[in-house]
Image 1 (cartoon, rainbow, N blue to C red):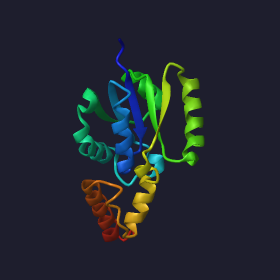
Image 2: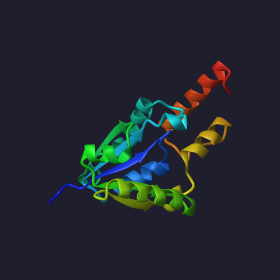
Image 3: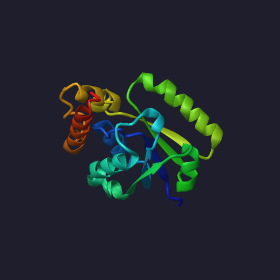
Image 4: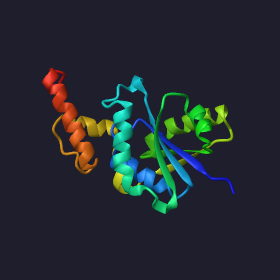
Length: 173
């Protein structure tokens, strides 16, 4: 039997409880999961790719061996389908929060299938408690002094606070 390798790609700027929910649920459908952190400088991430990889590793450490599978965290800066082939993946995992996510994700899945029809896309709905969480909203709420403790882990909360303090010290905020 062939090992089912799945990739869960994203910017993870920062990783949220919503991401962690999808990662945990993805472990039920693959034998190995690669959490692929996109470098994606075009999105102007708050954290470097290396910082985001480290945050993901810290926040999913408790999931290691969950369901007896291996979870690997890697960054990538290439076409997702090229990265998937390089990793031996046959499945792309995408999380959906709401109907509004579906149109974009559906188009992306269609393009990816045209690029490589051997790699399937699997959509996982976010659990009810995580459906509204997005990194963009978390950053905005936190930057403006709102409570983000129900959206991110304490370690991510600290890193966000440190980053905003650095920005204020530079006069960026």
